Length: 225
Ligand code: TMP
Image (cartoon, rainbow, N blue to C red; front, side, top):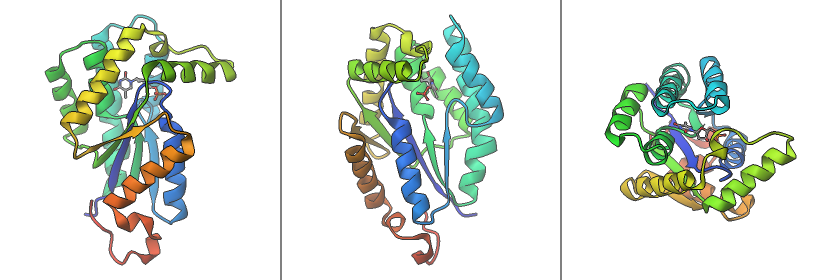
C-alpha cells in the first residue's frame, strides 16, 4: 500500500503555523502533489465539536482536557489522516501529539508518561515523518495572537488567556521535544517575516524529499518517505 508524507506544524500561540501551512499546501498543490491540510483539534466533524468545547469552556479539569484532545486525535487519525496517507497524499497537519506533550505535559504539568501512552493509543503509533517547530518568544506570540483577535473583533480564547508562566513552560516543552527528536523536528525561527519562514520550510522539505520540488507528473513512481 503506498504511503504518503505526514508533516506536522507545531508551536505556541501566534507562531504563524496556519499561514505557513496554507503556503506549503498551495506550493505542493501547484506542483500537482495530492495534499490534505487538516488541524487538531478539529480535523473531523466530531473534532469540530470537541474544538469548540476545548477552546470555549471555562475551567475544564486538566485530565478532562487531556482526554478530549486524545479523543479528537483518535478520530482524526482513523477517519482522516491514515486514509489520506494510505492514498499516498501529503498530509499537512496543524498541531499533533507534540502539542499535547507541550501544553498538557509541560504547561498543565500532567504526567508525561501517561501522555505518551495516551498519544500511542490515540494514534495507533502513527508518528509524523517531519515536524516543523515554529519557535517564537512567548511574549511576541501572545502579542500577535492578541492583535489578530482584536482585528477580527474576537476575544482571546481560553488558552490564550492562561498565565504567562504556562506559556513559558510549554515553550520549554517544545524545545525539549526538538532536542530529543532532532531527526524528526526541524526548528524554524518564527520571528522571520512569513515569506522568509515559508522559504526556509520549503528548503528543508525539499532537501529531505527532493521529489517534492518536481511536478508530480515528473515523478515516475511514488517515492517513500
Ligand atoms: P490553534 O490550533 O488555533 O493554535 O488552537 C488550538 C489550541 O489547542 C492551542 O491553544 C493549543 C491547544 N492544544 C492543546 O492544548 N493540546 C493539544 O493536544 C492540541 C492539539 C492543541
